Image 1 (spheres, one colour):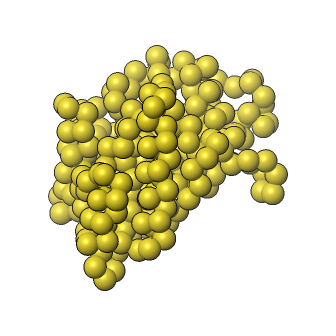
Image 2: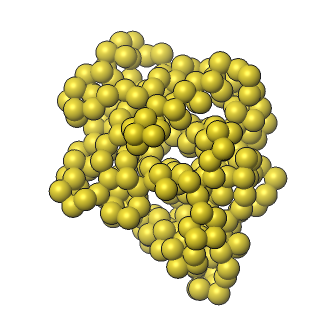
Image 3: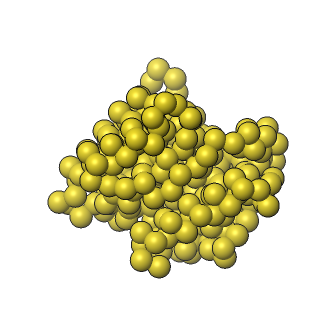
Length: 251
């Protein structure tokens, strides 16, 4: 089983990228599970636009442990198994709690045995890398972390913090840094800034995604680019990204 976590600053296009990766991986014949680790619970929306998905934290809050695995998962485009951790009641509790609860409940309810995924992708908010938000980095969860950034200063700052967190955990047998995914915003000196980041954190750009109106058009349709525009250059960029990620696992 390949297990990877994708981190990045909020609003950087992380969930869009991850969902297109899941769709592309499924196209390649892999059984994929995508776990949204963001309180907004919108990671998997473009994979199951017509199906309402309960968040794990809502189920735990409302039913304690009185629910089945099928209540917290659904299968979306390409058979991708979708899970959303969810978040606390606004103003109460810790958002990281949803991530911890989701990962614990997936194990407890036998998700990995039932679905037997080839690839598990954790989609994790990277503005804060502490507590529950670092959970997917820990031993037994993701094997590698990939960071999405643009050349915008705040995105680079968040990426650097995430890389520091990964490095701090390296002696514990936790996930290692797989590389940087450049999601371009066409800001000045964007490539140079991200290359400088890679030098600072001893990593590399594994793939570059060009800015494209097709991403927005697909989202307006409630779909991934892979589903909405399968023959487009942007869809091929997501496929190339998936191949580059697999190379980090020596496949």
